Length: 75
Image (cartoon, rainbow, N blue to C red; front, top):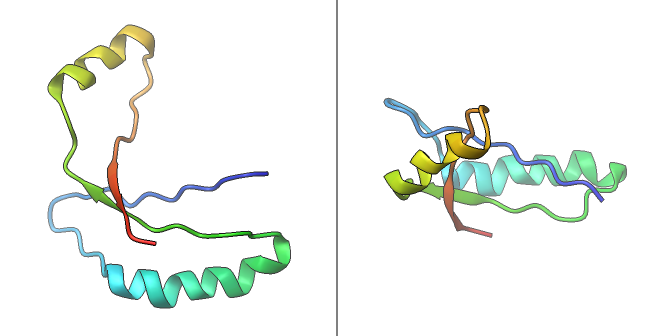
């Protein structure tokens, strides 16, 4: 089984229509990818990042810049 995560970073002046994404776009995803074995979809809404302490710890175990997101599960 595979999982694909697509994240749209929350940046200054970003526009993102969650209602459209949840209803229209995800319906398109389901319609066009089910034949390839898509089992389910999930929509998470990113929340405010947590903690300077956690961010400061990252360079101890990696030199890769992560994409961090805390999410509210919408579906």
